[in-house]
Image (cartoon, rainbow, N blue to C red; front, side, top):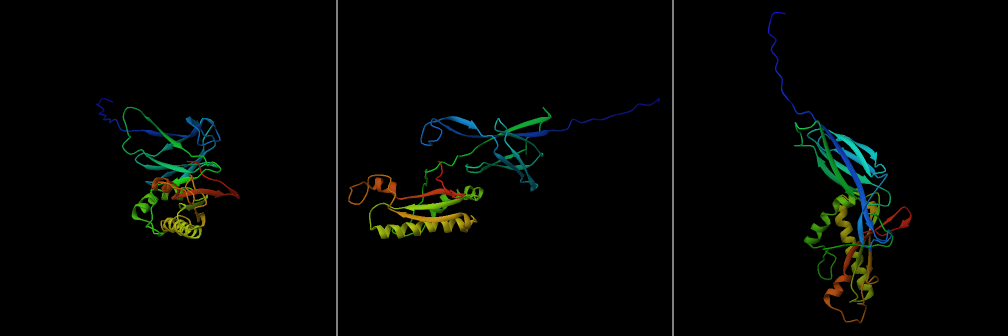
Length: 250
């Protein structure tokens, strides 16, 4: 009463960070044939979502995607997050996102979108791990092969609920017995390397196939180019789990 009241105010950042996660899969022209034409993407309902704050190491939050293939979370400011998606008969996958640097005065709500594409596991489909090389007539992995395997470590760790078989294949040159022995040793070299990188040893096994699964005409006595022989010299993996044999989709 009878005096001036002096006030001061400042406009501050106040934001809610909303993360919308979309989980999808490839849509094939023939739904059960992964070799058919890809014609788009389909949503995945009831995919499990785990959210981990990597900045605070906060315990993961769990949710399922709805009938639109979505799950929604509120995030903390100035934090890095790991988002993991899982679904039965699919390979698990994770991505990272962040709220660091996203504060704004323009809106209270900051809406973020992340899409995770899960790969379905198809029966009787084999994956070739490219760029796996060995010393001539030996099972020793070359350094460039180790670099390739290093890029797959996270995949194997994310999917350690599956039992994965590493297969090694040779061309038809040489005796059946020699090729069988060499391929088993090479498959074991890959498994040993992955185990050395903390992949669960109970969930990964080695299998040498020798020349028993050629992918072309280059059997014993057939004249083939070096490129054709190389097609048969390959390292692969397939999934075996829950009492049934499966081979993975691409």
